[in-house]
Amino acid sequence: MRRMMMMILGMMMIKMAHHNRHLLPHPSNPTRPHLLPHPLNPKSSSVAQVIRGSRGVVFTVEVNHRRTKPSQSPSLKSSESIKTVCAVTQQPDTCFTDVVSVNSGNNAVNPMVIFNLTLQLAVTELTNVSSLPKTLISNSNDLRTGSALGDCANLFDDAVSQLSRSVESMRGESVLTVEKVGDLKTWISAAMTDQETCVDGLEEMGSTAVDEVKMKVQRSSVCMSNSLAILGHMDEVLENFGMHLH
Image 1: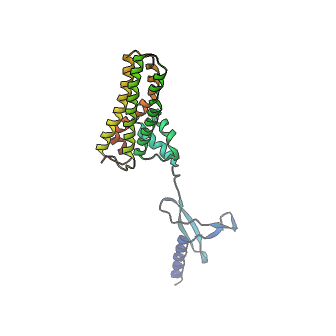
Image 2: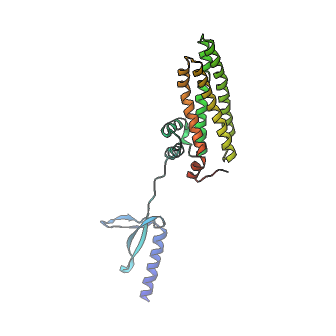
């Protein structure tokens, strides 16, 4: 009978230890309370706690201590995502730096968002340089150069239109289709061709403005090249994020 009572008492003490936090005598100071950690945590390490009950009954309770991994900050997640997408471009470091510079709020963790940022960068750079031919025309007395620069002005306007069309087509899109990727490639390639045609025309005319135009369009060319590279590897990029083209 006594043995049975001791077993029942032991079981009751174990149950209480699993559902409550108990104050136990501190190992080094009997007068100092010692807090028993809560044991219920599947992802933790186990430690045996010794509990002494009434009448000298001694038993052990397995106590688990939580081990948690620090979560990544939004900025770290965003940086890793941008690096993954930019890795497919010819200038990944430049791509990464440019995208980070316009990634307000560190929200760029989706490859489509990151692609849109490269596209917006291209539009901004091309818009900034689109007024250059008209400025050069006003400063030039050479009729042939003026004619070539006039062509450049029209070509730049068309290039901006092509890129703006690309940005608009991506507005509100949550998925990418094979057809949409094809359209984007066509529009961005057309914008790049417009720039190249302008430079080629100035070179044919022997214009003194060609070097300045080449230098000014370099940034927009790099941005458009990055966007095209991402589109060209979109299957691979999306796969890295557990996504796919539709």
